[in-house]
Image 1 (cartoon, rainbow, N blue to C red):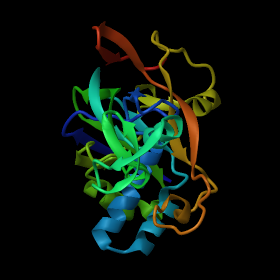
Image 2: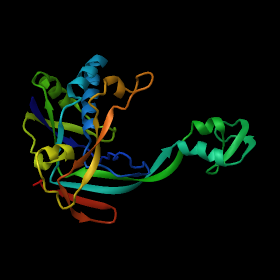
Image 3: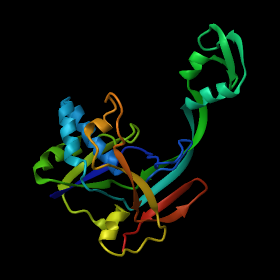
Image 4: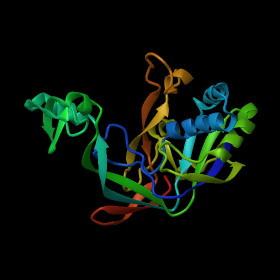
Length: 267
């Protein structure tokens, strides 16, 4: 087994919603989770070769790999009010509201309609429409590059190294990144966000003052490529697991809707 360390620079602010938080109040993790990093490798493999089978091979290479992220010296987090579009409320409002016969403001046809947020909408248009709403979302900015370490089998090093260099985003399309360098290097564990179950194997550890513990998503050991492939037909089993991570960060400054953390290595 060998460690690969890749240094990435984020091109802009980014946001990774923590599992189980509502999209209308989306608290962000300071880093992409292990699943986002692994799936970025799979996506890169498919985009680079145009070969789905190679993407499947890459998934099998890194599915159970240990992934650690070394944080930069400073991490800034801000909460922003954003406009959102969502679908699920229209059907619920139709069930509760009263209907009448009239012209739908979307399709222009005479049908049974409901008044939804000032618009007259028929059932067909309502089920396929989005409504405007607002929400809070956290965005993260790093003071410098972030280092991602992945433990791989020796025979897969070349493949994974090549795909690390090609990664352009982790998760959502707004998290644009570019790879600055890749090297064989052991991760400095005391500067990395670590899963609590792994830390327990190394004995007692002193928590930082902030005691920042967040849930991140990893890929389940018994999952398959078909489980993470959005084009798989039929039912897919859940390919992901939730793991609590300890972050070596403490609060440095705080405002009404922003916070700056600084790196404090784990003892």
